[in-house]
Image (cartoon, rainbow, N blue to C red; front, side):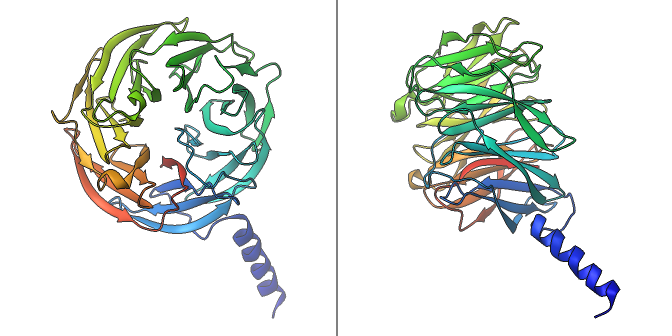
Length: 368
């Protein structure tokens, strides 16, 4: 073998060790996490028509729990899509990956600042993680995108309302100045103001309009939409919208607009701010909403059934929209599948594909 071929082979081996086998094009990608004892990210390449093909698996450097732990935001992407964050709920850590096309390189793994991290939020150089294990807290990190590293923000850890409030999600508002956490067991929505130094105020605990607040998202006007699972009671789920002022105070816009379905938990909003989709885990339905100019909610379909995920046994959980919101994807932990739909101009969903052999422990979903 010539010297040139030896060098070329060495470079190829190094590249293969650092990145997945996905082709380095940026047509699109979808990522989920196995949440297995040896936690992995599953990488799917997205074609122009929205169909997916699995192209790689990357270790997180941490451990999962072996079972879907019912949170929203176990994976998160930076706004530019270059960096991916993941929680390792079984080893109390978070991992950072650099994304090149559809390939991933593990850049950093750090302690989460608490027990059982379940959700992660990113806004600019600030990253906050929700630790749901007793005592539950939020903890902040500065993100260095030049070096690909995370550094704890001093004095950033804050407790929630109780040691075990069953908190499923953490997220920033669109300005990055407010941090929100939902608490299922206490029916509270916690809002923290974030200071210039990156540290949060004490939480402003506010009552959810409906019971069991779970997933949430902010629309283009920075109104907060929150799903309400109502303890999984049959056909009792709903979604509420709130106006949020600069101090983090919530004022109801649309209170508990019924899905007519069961256990609405995860929610996403299209990029144009016109539509929202919630997954009803209890009976295998996706519910679509129209979002009015002032955050008013109305059902896309009177029955609340905008798409089926395969019946009650399918148990849909995480949802993700592509950056342009042309495609919606969802995980079914009951059947171990990943489903895709095309989002029409009127908000209706057209089924594309079922991808099989997704671990039933899978947690977290993001799309690019």
